[in-house]
Amino acid sequence: MLARDDQDSLKRTPLHGLHVSLGGKMVPFAGYDMPVQYPAGVLKEHLHTRTSAGLFDVSHMGQIALRPKSGKVEDAARALERLVPQDIVAIAPGRQRYAQFTNADGGILDDLMVANFGDHLFLVVNAACKDADEAHLRAHLSDVCVIDSLTDRALIALQGPKAEAALAKLCAEAPAMKFMDSGPRKVAGIDCFVSRSGYTGEDGFEISVPTADADRLAKTLLDNPDVLPIGLGARDSLRLEAGLCLYGHDIDTATTPVEAALEWSVQKSRRTGGARAGGFPGAEKILAHFDHGAARRRIGLLAQGRAPVREGALLFADSAGGEPIGQVTSGGFGPSLNAPVAMGYVPTSQSALGTNLFAEVRGQRLAVQVAAMPFVKNTYKR
Image (tube, rainbow, N blue to C red; front, side):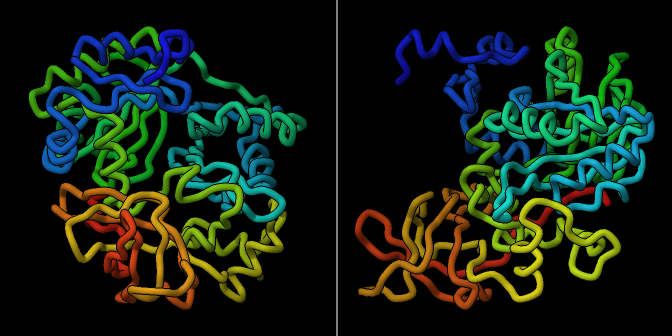
């Protein structure tokens, strides 16, 4: 438990009072006092999101606008390509793309979402990295862009198969949006930024809302009986079932996008032979991984028993003896599967689907098998 002084030092999102009023169990997370669960409990919150709609407070995330000094969004896009291996220029107005900031060794400084709002770019970055990300942008892009940290906005995620119907009551444009559409929208008469995306594998939306309107919007959404508040516990189990990386666990400064099985996020135009190949930090190493493969790879794992295999568990090729060949980076119980799920890193030679491995749990080696991700089929509206 944190001492009272430490608890008082935690930041609070604009929805903190709402979480407390709803009986949220508050815990420290990325410097914020956040709800890990509500009275319904993690299991019910997880399953409700899969079958209905869940509301998540993700206001601890960083929201940043990149405004081109030239007035041309293409200039901001080309500038951002100095820092990420993705094709930012090709993001059409009203669309967004998943990206990573990389370092000189090809490792991942953070992963982020980049949207083209027509006259500027809108970025959402991870809470624990947002100060470093802003400094990184200012150090490298200030010649071309005004970097505007949007500290006066909250961020709400509405996820699940009934998310569209719930949001449509407040935003007539919501049903027409497709996966990764993003831009300004009116929601309950409030000027918001809405993207059709999320971190659960379910269809859903992320809504950036002015701080002053956040509590009202959240309460209006929760007035819908199909919508329940969801805490960090279910957010983690949902993203794990969806095979999505958690920064600082499944990806970090020592992991390249290829090692992390994120090749799909790097467009051909930025790869070897592409029109704008390279030109980003760590390009030599990352492109070499594309051309020749990486020595290790992120994999999904299904445990053969009922015991969850947690982060940090060592992975072995044999049931007894031998040195560890890898490690679990995320793991827990998958409520949708009613079974343990995990992900981690092993040598690429041991990463084929169906490969039998062993995870060390409380001194015993438990059988696990390399499995396809996502563990639960995603339901994005394409």
